Length: 192
Ligand code: FES
Image (cartoon, rainbow, N blue to C red; front, side):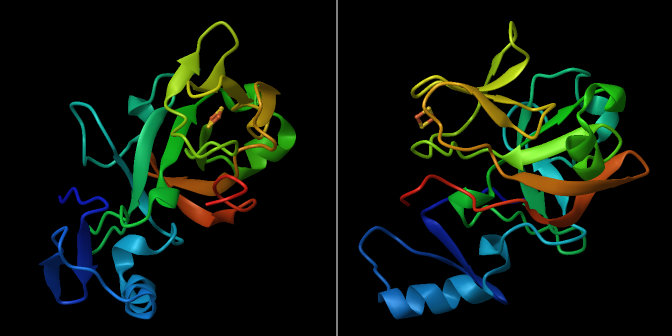
């Protein structure tokens, strides 16, 4: 399982680590990104890997997620190759599990076995939504205090965020949630 962030670029068939002194022309950077499986957005069939913690890099199983929150941070992972799609910061996701009866109808329709997935990039200014407001049962961005309701399509219930976190449609197989469709909207802040 690899863990590769902004300083690392995958070229199909071989890995190239690009040091700080090397720079690609924008057109070449875009061309490489277009063919880099790690930089693709979540694809149908992708599973999810824990981003942090003791289980970092492991596939997320629904039964391992605490019922009722908090969320875990995750990245999509291509199941056959094991490529973690961490080549774009816009692929940061949050997953949480709820009783399906606690979800509003639209949210339940996009969930898999009560597991919901949202972009983990705050729609205000792009910070990671990596905290949990237990008193509200809400996803919380500590940069400026935006809160999102994970049981109601990540609607904004506090703070300056201008719109909900886009949701990712899920399905579930043998307790493993996977990507069943695209994001419900544009990922990231207004300017990025
Ligand atoms: S970036 Fe999240 S509240 Fe400002």
